[in-house]
Image 1: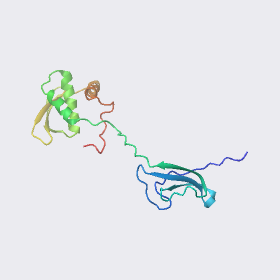
Image 2 (image 1 turned 180 degrees about the vertical axis):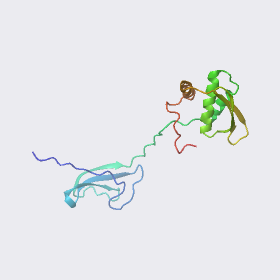
Image 3 (image 1 turned 90 degrees about the horizontal axis):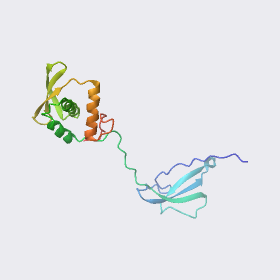
Image 4 (image 1 turned 90 degrees about the vertical axis):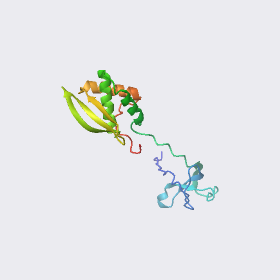
Amino acid sequence: MAPEREYKIESSARRCTTCDRVFAVGEEYHSAVVETEEEARLARRDFCPACWKPDAEGYYSFWKTSIPEPEPKQKSGPRLIDLGRLMQLFERLADAEEPENVRFRYVLALVLMRKRRLRLLSTRRLGGRSEAMTLREVGGDRQHTVTNPGLTDEEVQSVADRLREVLDMPERWHEEEPADAP
């Protein structure tokens, strides 16, 4: 039995071998496998319709193909957060007194500070583990007072879960936004 030979045929150069014209997306062209003079290797050659000679000698195989449409880029990372929606939710909770809503508003304030929608102006101690933060909307004069209730790790996780639920966000909502995000 003869030893098996392995052939490696390169992918399309996306340009005509004869005239060097670059193929456009969707354009049809012809490809052929030919034997090269150096080392008797097989190689791929691409031809535009004007340069294609179907009856030329030396083709081991040939076919008609086209340049495919580029695949749409998959967004990696988290979905974008609607900051307007977050600000509305934050403002709606301004008069909340229930401990769960106070904790939720505090975490919302932290997210909005991180997204540069709110800026910290001052803090003052309220007693125990809690403090009050005075925040200003970036690009405006509106100020907000937010209570930092001194959350435990379990409370932070609970609030994060609720925030993900409200915003319909994936598990890792806290990652950075993609660089091309507004």
